[in-house]
Structures are given as C-alpha cells and as structure tokens.
Image (cartoon, rainbow, N blue to C red):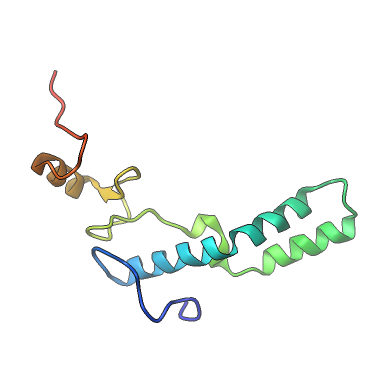
Length: 113
C-alpha cells in the first residue's frame, strides 16, 4: 500500500514491485510488532475480564494486514525471486550456487565425498 511506503527506499540489490512491497511489509511489521504482541497477550490472557479480551481481539482484527507476520515473504536479494530461497543467505538456489562457486560466500564450498 502506498500509505506505508517510504519516499526514499533503503534497499540494496535487485528492485522490482514485489521486492518493494515485501520491504514495505517488513518495515511496517517491525514498527507495529510490540503493539501487536501486547494485544495478542491481552486477548489470550484468561485471567483478564472477557470485555477487555474482546476489545483487544477486535483491535487485532482491525489492524492492517501488513502488520501480520505471515505477510512477509523471503525473497532473493539478487533477483527478487520468491521461491527456492535459502534463508541464511537470502538468495535463490541459482544465485547462491554461482556465488558459492565464485568464492563470494565465506564458509561455503562445494561438497565432495
């Protein structure tokens, strides 16, 4: 959504609309994470009054979907690909392979047995 998008992007690597959207989702989620966790705690705490828990649940359901952690997608930093991404390196399979063979990734070498 454009209402969350920053005027100036601080993204390195490949940029397309999906990468920008994912970056925006990550920023919005990080900004509102503590508020969301507090509301979840209130909504799940059975010692609190039912009315307070219901209000917290209502606020949670009215939050924008970008504040939900399930909206964040691991994308390749080099190609923007959304599938086959290795989490530790944030790269898709093929760019990971090319960088590993070129020796650009420290601690990674081709297996041989």
